[in-house]
Length: 117
Image 1 (cartoon, rainbow, N blue to C red):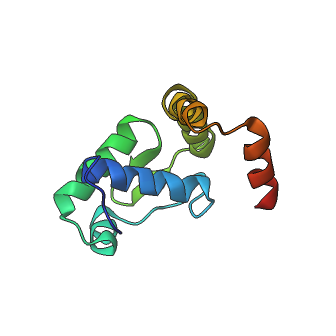
Image 2: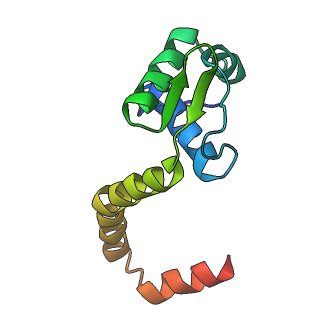
């Protein structure tokens, strides 16, 4: 995984695991890779993976079964989408609208592009 400099690595790792959950790679109550396995997979320090898993557990996205590992919390995908949608509406969309105004991009231009995909 290529990490960017705009966010802490553990947050980017947590975001990636959330992406995998909403993409259906891991479903409700599925076991996810262990901290060590995920660290090796992404070529990061195990302590960084621990921070990512701790953050996801605090957010209620995953839970730990002692001795068995981490599992996806029921309804996690829905909660991730809800949080990301709110963040998109609050942060990304206003900047997108600002750029559209500056560049004279209309909603119709966006609709045409959307339909081309």
